[in-house]
Length: 134
Figure (tube, rainbow, N blue to C red):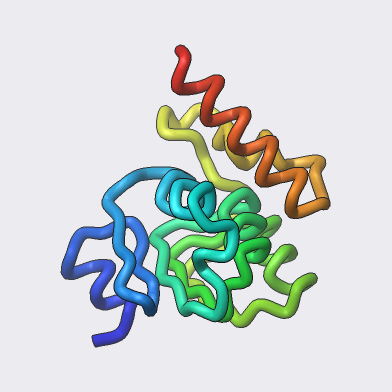
């Protein structure tokens, strides 16, 4: 079974070729294992339902080999193109929309003007902590 099929059938938010899966939403399924091991996704193939610039930067920093997604933001695509990451998507969108449907996803907003992958990792961890406190 390919990873996108596993994603659908298991109702996961992410699946990786090492067997890792998660039901968490947003960037949590990517950033949580990276906080334990920065290179958790090194040389892996990943399927994720939705990838914006934030997730693209994290996966790229972690050393992902290949990514498949249903929805990819243009900024996420630019990251994969810049770093030579193999990817596929079903739908390309201008940006990832927040859960309320009222504007840009806060994670996408956090990295909008960041180009450095490690700086993005730090900024996204700060943003998650800020949101957790609310």
